[in-house]
Amino acid sequence: MVFSAWISRLRSSSRPICTKVRNSFFHKQSAVLSIEVLGSEQIRKPFASSWGGSLLPLALAASAGSLVFRSYQDNGTSYCQAPNLDQTGKSIGGKGSTDYMVKGSHKKVPQELIEKLKVICKENMTMDYDERYFHGKPQNSFHKAVNIPDVIVYPRSEEEVSKIVASCNEHKVPIVPYGGATSIEGHTLSPSGGVCIDMTLMKRVKSLNVKDMDVVVEPGIGWMELNEFLEPYGLFFPLDPVKPINLRVASMVFSHACATKGSLDPSKSAGPGATIGGMCATRCSGSLAVRYGTMRENVINLKVVLANGEIVKTGSRARKSAAGYDLTRLVIGSEGTLGVITEVTLRLQKIPQHSVVAMCNFPTIKDAADVAIATMLSGIQVSRVELLDEVQVRAINLANGKNLPESPTLMFEFIGTEAYSREQTLIVQKIASEHNGSDFVFAEDPEAKKELWKIRKEALWACFAMEPNFEAMITDVCVPLSHLAELISKSKQEIDSSSLVCAVIAHAGDGNFHTVILFDPNEDEQRKEAERLNHFMVHAALDMEGTCTGEHGVGTGKMKYLEKELGMEALRTMKRIKAALDPNGIMNPGKLIPPHVCF
Image (cartoon, rainbow, N blue to C red; front, top):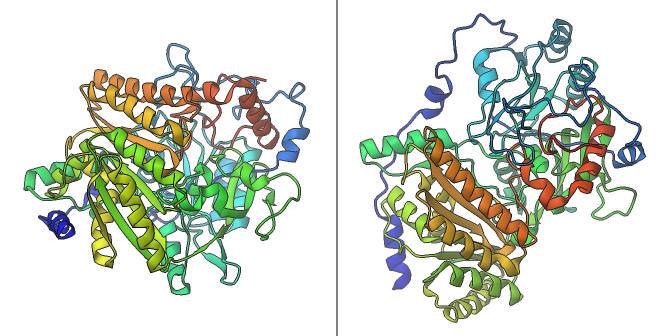
């Protein structure tokens, strides 16, 4: 009876919104310039941040005290000096920076390099302004850069990537790898111009080893595409980053929804999803990480093009190895600052025999967080534990005309045999009842499960129903599980007292939570308040031995917190590795390592 009532609430009111937002938005006023167009104009492939780098032995062999490198402008700048300074002289992205406009020195790409790229890429290259603007102004992030890339190339093979990178290194021209365009911390900005390497044409499945439960793919394939390919074999790749929320398009979608009194239809404007290369580059995870781990645990080996054009394979296909430095883990999370990923071998899982999706409400967010912690401590191998606060549930109701109880809510997924999944569900139901849980419902029917899980999948989109014309700043803190309830409670007190609308969404099973902070981009005071709240939560997490980013990565947005989190010695070590592998500083410059770090 209770479950039937929930389903009736979930299914109420759902009129689709018809929109063609992307084309109309991305072609907005691109300035009338007479610019040479190289090759076909039809290319508008979204993003697959195929990045990464390698060779720790080489890095450790380099003597930090004796190496002094020059920037790509060849102006003799010390390797610890940052070219991206604002008008006050403060390093953008450096310690204490709050500026979102990333500046960088820029010089014209030599014609000799352009001619080389034409030979390598043939028609898969362009200098069209619209394409360069689209790649240089990420639509999923409010971070911006003064410059955009000068050239976009679309390699089709590892050999082409190697030649492109070697040519850029010879001319000391910056490189920015690019893929599914889903990152939100400014990873694909081109603050110094240069060459954007769009990896989305490299999307083949090179080999599937069903008996070994692994697959070898190119970096441009999306995780959703890959799972569609794997499904007939009874296998799947378990990482599931949320489908991208285009912050500006979302605002337009909801403005249209308000005008037409329609409801949310994210599929009309969501992008193609994260790609495997970009997922490696940012060390991403998702809601299934509590069961299967992050990208770090699910990549067996990589092939990477280094800054000098050399191609390195980081390991064998064995499930475990103690041979040498772990170059694979060095590359994962390097955000394109060490090299360009051209091949990935992934660990696969069997599609679960049976699953149950459950949902429960709580009077306070601390009660909900406590249940998530108690569930993990019980030893149950839960597949997902997701937390939504009352503001987020209100947004879902508003966006979709639903009638869900507007209180903190936990969502679970249990997998295994039918008997085991049901047993887990009943144990968690008992745990929830001991922490003031109510309206515990669960579903086993495929359509009913899809209906329940749709609530979580639409959460980010739904936030814009509350403020259709605003942008979102999304936090990404993560703490040891024992501190989760304390951090969420402390953060909720702060954001509830703010004038801004803020919603909390958490991967509660591994201590990772996001706050969606909505602000008017035209109001400087609101942007500052959003930054203050973000700053508060990050430092609260760091004080609890947590991290400023659980899964989104550093990019330009989180650099300013790394010194407090990792310490200067760790950052200097990272800089030495970067200097050894990329002495000309061409690989995705201005990201990951704070500019004030010297050695």
